Image (cartoon, rainbow, N blue to C red; front, side, top):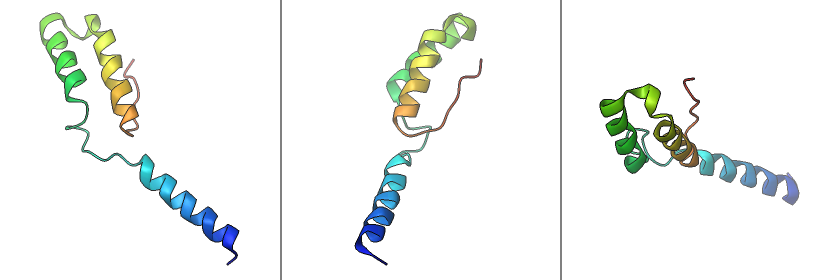
Length: 70
């Protein structure tokens, strides 16, 4: 294996490890989760799109692969 191939493999492995979430999804983004949940309880999900999307953006930034339910 040449040095460039070895470097490429190490870079790919490091990249893969960095993209994995470092937390469980239930523990990630507690602030946006709380706001989303409070809004849904008080107003229903149809009125809380702003908080739902904010929480999904936060989860994605933590490395989770989540999509909108709409």
